[in-house]
Length: 69
Image (cartoon, rainbow, N blue to C red; front, side):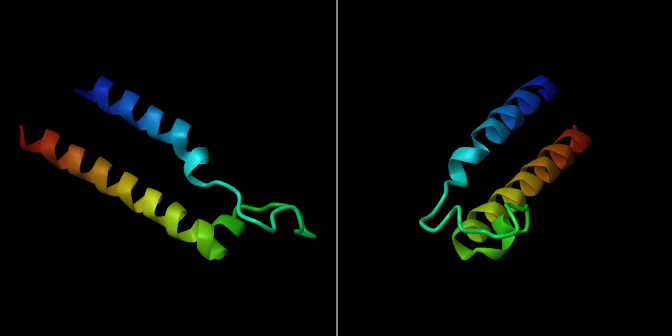
């Protein structure tokens, strides 16, 4: 089961860039690209924070489920 969860997480992480697609206006940042851009821009923030929350919830659920067995 741990191997399945690890593979599932790797697939999710591999497809994360597809979820965080660029929006019109990219390329006009004077200071370059930073990680904060993905949490400040509303177009990215909703998806970024949603992915983080979903990942944390999934990991917490699987750990809790494994502890009860």
